[in-house]
Length: 112
Length: 111
Image 1 (cartoon, rainbow over the protein chains, first blue to last red):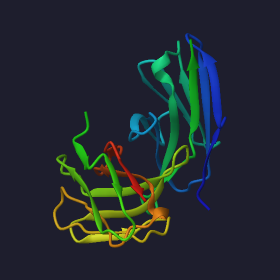
Image 2: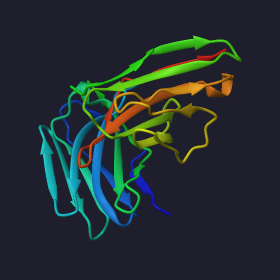
Image 3: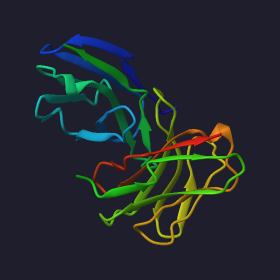
């Protein structure tokens, strides 16, 4: 069964600190992997999208990595800000039926 | 800024009422999706469409129905709302090789 698992489920860090969120998936065949940021009560907003051949992609203070061999991805946030408090969701697109398989998300809280 | 819009943003209605949640996008995307999300929980796909006159049910069973008569428009209808339908409904669209863009969502409360 195609699955996307994220860890940790929730994370609290102090403003200015770095953090790394993990995503493991079993989706095969794999088309691409996306990271979304979702503020409470809002729709998700795309941060990065990576295909099979890409190992890393940055978007400002967000850097995503992908290891297609081990089926793992991470999202690293540098110098966290209060506005980074949100849920971060890993989504994998299947290449067989083009469905998006969603992870449950990591709830990140940045404290001053 | 993504050009996908959902209305209304918030809706409180009584049990048994018929409602339609609107979703429109101006990006010319063929694929559109409806997700249901309870607070603090993951998104669940309830309907999707790969183009005009194409609609499919998603992973989560839903009593709602959808239609896709125009590329830009993908409304979701509940014929008879119940309290169990209380949730947030998110509409999204995507192109062939683009990520999905989401609307702001409709928070539905059925009393």
